[in-house]
Image 1: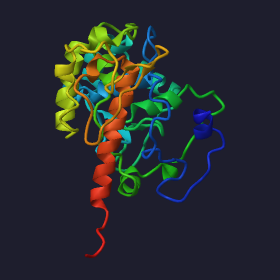
Image 2: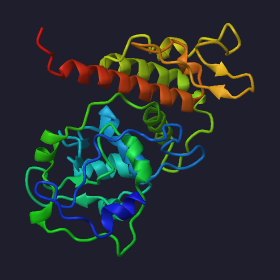
Image 3: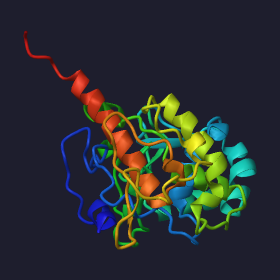
Image 4: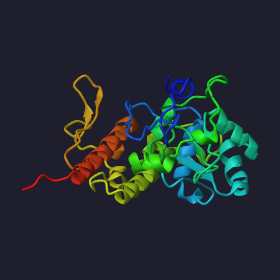
Length: 286
């Protein structure tokens, strides 16, 4: 599995990678599978993504500028404000053991000293944590400070892209406010009115096409009973994803089941990145 590939007999590469592999170009191969299954308590990596994405906590814990590691800026505030609420304990040492248990490593030197990292934990790419599990005792090898990855240099070659917020992370943030053992809802639409407004604001900030209008779509109903080109059911009654028109998506997407909406957001984000990449290519001479 993916974790075994990270920890079992890792291949030594030239600097600045050493034992680190880049995953910043990977897309979610299965966007219909959520990061946290309905009815389950979110895992440690999923919770950390939600915490690091919460702007109200960025003065306590935050991503490094390159998006490949994260750091605790205020350990005492982290113990008082975050640990009891989201992890059901208040000991910093217990949190460190939990992070180590999930395969996170702490950098001991350089500009990123005392930041934590994992190959499958990158800013804006929470679906990568679906590949994470707790490594076995004999899987996690020690790495000398001289062989720690250089994330500034790696990110110059492969920058972690800025991506729009995933709706699942916003739902997760709301669920985590209910306590450390709160479980993901079976029906995400119970969370949709407020989450849809946040998603619309995030889409505007990320310059996603304006017709991805989640806030308005949250209260709309299909005039044709859910069928037609905007999505609905096939003749056999199975749900089908809506078509993604060039330049954007339909305004009523917030009423879709959450797997369809997540897939649509992924497609919209990919479409945006493809347009940006095409615009950055050298133009042929006239």
